[in-house]
Image 1 (tube, rainbow, N blue to C red):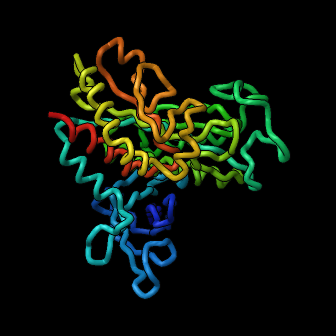
Image 2: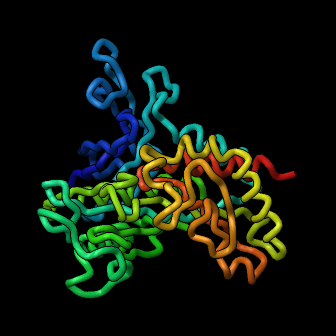
Length: 340
């Protein structure tokens, strides 16, 4: 029996790259390990990655996951986009992330990313919003229970089950502060692992929502006005931070992030200025601060970390529409690069 391999990659759409995928049918005696997955090609002129006269781009398999949608021996193949000469395509952000992961391997950086997203009706309104006007103000929706507070739980639950079946290191889900807004968390895992798995988690979310006639948005501010935006809060630690006395490395990491605040903000997703306003549990995009248990700071040090004097920090600035390869690479470069 043949195996269906869904090749998944990130396109060249600006300002926010999008997922693309297509199916390759392979012989079942070829195996389903990464080494068994052949390179493939696609029309880069249709994905904002090439011109029509030199349209061929290459898909290089990077990770293989069981396919929970098709089941059986079928697989999902997370790919890097390459040029025909074997070099990384300019839109291939995984290649740079891999170099950083190798360079700072001794620090054992670990990540957990909280992916917020919004479920939309075909008309563009979030689930739980009336077709005209707005629902009751924020308050009962965050981690809520019951028909009045919650919409879309079936999709969020199906997505969590799919991630678990695929081997994605999903660590939880919850309803968020706006109707139709949810979150799933990936990690704690390494730099490349969290980035690969977040993209696969996003793919599964979009794919499952198709079956419900629902659109998934990871836009930073899907509804203007007095509503929280969608972030991708990024939890980070190194070996040194996790060991006894690690609080000094956590504080040093916060200071290092502050010194490169503008560099990070520039790569933290389209619409970051709309989301980081200083309201709705954010610090302003043009200001930097850190503090214990402060959700209005750029960087939050969890209260338990302050008690234990070790653990991790949470960068609250990344948007829901980040490229995790870029954000995770930047955090490692900035924090591990500043270590003596």
